[in-house]
Amino acid sequence: MPRPFTLLELMIVLVVAAVLMAVVIPRIGRLPAGLVVEKACGDFENAVYHAARRARVTGKPTRLTFDLDRHTATVEETGGAPPPPADDAEAAAEDRAEGRPTEPLVHPLDEAIGREAADGTSEPDSAPVFVFYPNGEAGGTTLPFRVRGRSLVLDVDPLTGRPLITAVENQ
Image 1: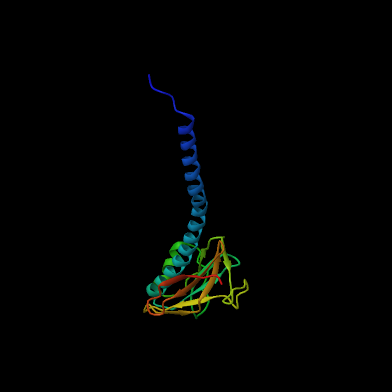
Image 2: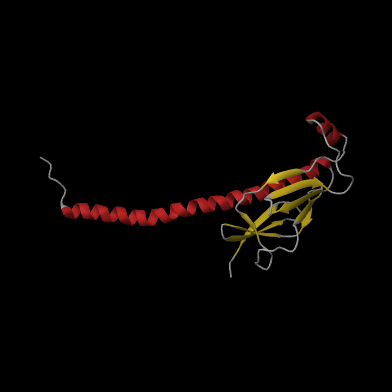
């Protein structure tokens, strides 16, 4: 007949389980915050890549403007007359094929993204704008932003137009 567990063995199992829970539960709580930061960075990267691709495809400079109050990034061609309204997809494709300006494209950004000025306050100096050229080059300012209490900065490589997101150490 198997012998039953002693009180000491049960206490040891409960202590081990409590220690494991004390270590694992705080890490699970931090996991979603890290995923939110990754998603926000992915939103910025997608907008940058789209603007750079659009410049290469259309052969015209493209402007990427971020509006962190509305949580949007707008991609549009620079210069020239405003695009005429396209009634359908076929007319829009014809406009692109003939080199006419196309409608601006608005990318939604994660709601967790907050504004942050270069000096660390929540009031930036102006709306950040990046310009992408058909040869792959890019220009513009840096974009400081916050996600879940983490300070980050978006910059664009001037030679390749690739997004560069770096974390800023809190002072």
